Amino acid sequence: MVKVQKFFAYFIFFIFALIYFVPKTSIYYFIEKELKNYEIVISNEELQESSFNLHITGGTVSVKSIESANIDQADMKIYGLYNTIELQEIVLSKTVSSFLPSKIKNATVSYTVFNPTNIQVKASGEFGEADAQYNLLNKTLYLKLKPSKKMLTKYRSTLNSLKKSENGEYIYEQNI
Image 1: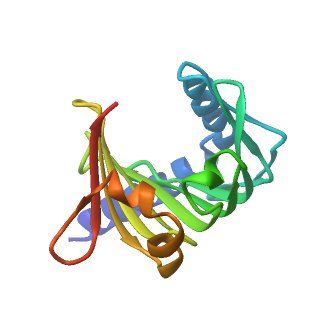
Image 2 (image 1 turned 30 degrees about the horizontal axis):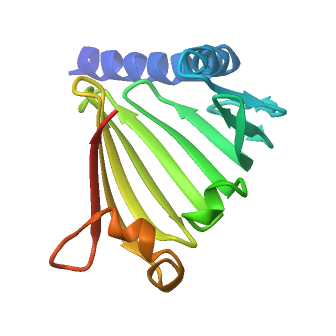
């Protein structure tokens, strides 16, 4: 019985030590390099590594050389089995604001090895609340939107391009 307890204690210590010593900044730069293949560039950000996460302050996101969003702050948490990036205070560019409200309060991107083919995204902002899932194998994006009053009144043309479900949510599904 004592050997089993020792084994679990050492195992838990090893996992915490592994998470603590993982080079979070290097992982961030690897992700940034991979995004560059899709013509997504993140610039002007400041990185601050702590024990169990990476805090990112500021940042401008450009897609195909077009400035698309400014992110106030983000936290990247890498735990191995469950990894998240929490983004806060995102302001979309003026070009996007013609078909979508420009302020996103927060967004959480998560990935777990228990569901390895999907990346989950939850976001809330002036547009309402959105849950999205991206399937890595099929390259399919599935989005479920609970629109805000602002979205329902000022951005009807955007909502018309989505399918309305019976409970008032809007659904978008597309191969990317």
